[in-house]
Length: 68
Image (cartoon, rainbow, N blue to C red; front, side, top):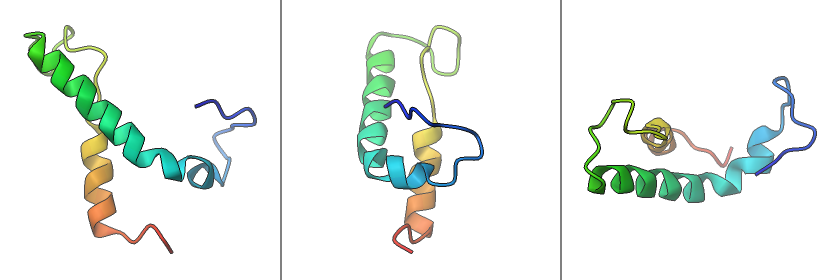
């Protein structure tokens, strides 16, 4: 998703992207499975593109109340 007026100091990024979190997590998991099924070794240059950020987001979601 493109945010046309994005800047590092933008304060409402979560308001803009918050409803996309579940889709982003789903896409990360799908990419992870694709890389594994392709026989690539995890945490190597060949396992690219890849991110573990979804694991952090899931942990934060389970420990924080995002509705407040």
